[in-house]
Amino acid sequence: MDFSLSEEHLMIQQAARDFANNVLLPGVIERDEKQQFPTEEVKQMGELGFLGMMVDPKYGGGGMDTLSYVIAMEELSKVDASASVVMSVNNSLVCWGLEHFGTEAQKEKYLTKLATGEVIGAFCLSEPEAGSDATSQKTTAIEKDDHYVLNGTKNWITNGSSADFYLVIAQTYPEKKHKGINAFIVEKGWEGFEIGPKEQKMGIRGSDTHSLIFNDVKVPKENRIGEDGFGFKFAMKTLSGGRIGIASQALGIAAGAYELARKYSKERKSFGTEICNHQAIAFKLADMHTQIEAARHLVYKAAWDKDNGNNYDVSGAMAKLYASQVAMDTAIEAVQIHGGNGYVKEYHVERLMRDAKITQIYEGTSEIQKIVISRGLLQD
Image (cartoon, rainbow, N blue to C red):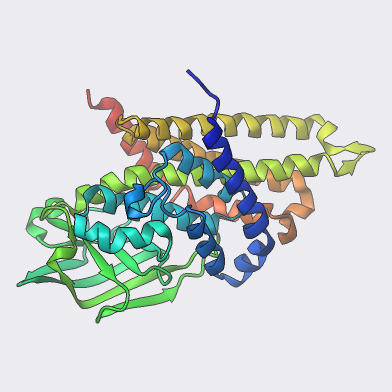
């Protein structure tokens, strides 16, 4: 075993850290308050190669491994989870899904623009009645001559109004249940495609989350991804990698909260000494650091499994389950260590606490992760 990072990984880590602190940090509180999408910051992320890190260079990507991606995700998430979720969706769900299951024509037309950050994408699976139960797709895609007609509503879509290309999961053959589901590439601006109001969220408020409405949207047959009926498998395979991205986001939120709490504890004094010298605070920091290190090993192991061609369904689910819990616990403790200041926006930890909660919900709730893990354990 070798637990050290390579020189390349360390360079990526430093580049992501510098970008987070120099570009994302200055406006992060204002963007959170105003629910403002980080348009300019995301553009710069694309220019630096953060939006297509794992994509083959022939399609404009960085050709990097999954470990490089999670290292960068952690650093950005320490500062701005709203920006990092854009990176996660574009890399893990949209680019990866297109590169591995799209046709060459689809890759040339869509992936090349997504990988370079010229545009960003969105992944559209959840519906009003199909969250954790992804098999219950009510959005329909009826085959008509050379196209499909798409009708339905998608909920809680990250990059909902900022994306240009959308991967949409819809039911074509209801009688076949999940085996009748397809996945399609839909472009913004197509007739009948409407973007609903922006969601008013507790956390990741800079991320634009919308409902999407499809009214008789014509989707060319060449925009279907994979064989007829492949949509559900496509979604599940893509989400397995997406969980590693969200696990790294959760890890970053936890690490960011810990670093702020540690720094504050060495500056704030009470009873004649810095509060880090009080055992009650020191023990909190010890627990936080230990749990973050454990989460980091789970996240890196899942990334290693993916890079080495191993099945990463269980390791990815474990990483997300544990890292998201650590993010929530650590952020709460960071607020506690800050005392009254922890409740004040300028100290950042209250935002990290609000951001942490969503990591236990999206791309599979913690309860769903336990289903994935237990099924994997009991397969043999």
